[in-house]
Image (cartoon, rainbow, N blue to C red; front, side, top):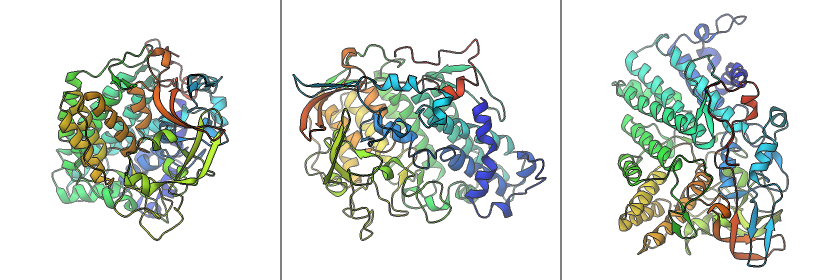
Length: 566
């Protein structure tokens, strides 16, 4: 993987920029012969390496094309294809073309058709040459996650070799658990997004053996489990907390991002393991009907009763409403992502008539009447129309310039989807209470426990300050309709929207059994259609990026690296 090797060479420079104290704390060694073993010889240097490897190599490095972190462009693609947001007039990084559906049936007599749908765009620009021009959407997630993998591999290789003060065993266990956790998370991102991936678990070594996305997910679970086991050796609470405090950026250690206890960390991992199951098996719900068959999909199977029960088991010991999770916050100095462009949310926090991302009509239509989250965050008055499908009457917090209220003009006590006020927006990086509770809701509904499932939906709404009456449904179909709407509302901008639409069957062609029905569309003539059918036809699992396979040809034992269904 030559591309990953090149990425890693820039790591020490990035690390030095990340902390003004790095020059003092790291032992520089011979500047004419820099090596990891020669430059990182004690715990202070290793914790900086471990922090920078995640927040710079994994979540920031190379993400300067649109925004300035993993959470702006790679996560932005998830929200674009999940139809939470849309792109603007331009096609920078294909943000306008990637989420454009194949066709939209506005009425029985009016259908709009796109001559270059998602799979065609992906294939046309999947090359190193296109990447150099910022046109290959497939590159960024892959680049970030494998850079993170290599950084973690180096930390793991050094953990037993450096010098420590205090409880050495606890500190080693905490640093290794940190690296194992992020390896699990990075493999989960690859296995859930790409048709095939690579297992790279040795520092400085590469592989040409591409494996299936299911095998990558299995490796993710292996590292999540290893993180849990390793945490068991961190017996000294004060030293565990001291090390974790050095691994997480100080600016993020506020609100829900405060330092996790070991038990909280294990519950975070259980939520993410449940996610690995849920997002990588089909559980279709198309046009109000559950269990619809989708032809030509790359999933290995559908959710079974056993799968739903496993999700329930994991989430029953998953993130609680009082637990801390991994978050990001902007700060005035030395931050790893920017307040104006560091997240998809920030890029959408504008009037609809300006800004990079726009709020989708299909997202806003999910809110129930009287939901304070809608009232607090979304306003009309600055509409936008463009292209085949994308028009909107909605802006995300157009009063974001105000600093009078927390979140920038939003209603106190109500969840904020976006703000450009420094330190106010809480970026959810991995697991969260809302995601865990929504998985509990869905599993219960699928298993026939409708009232219990609706109770979890109510709990999430209360947690986010929605101000809604108790959810009500008598049939499984009605409960699933509520569930799909609430997942989209409660978990927007968390990188799950596309995966949900995919497993529910919405992103597949209508001809194959998929599609999104009953959609609201604001067209270029400024007409509002309220019962449109979205025929997205998005590639469900992306091909391996050309930046990888053009330099690192598949070995004879590799699986296919291109999705054969598109």
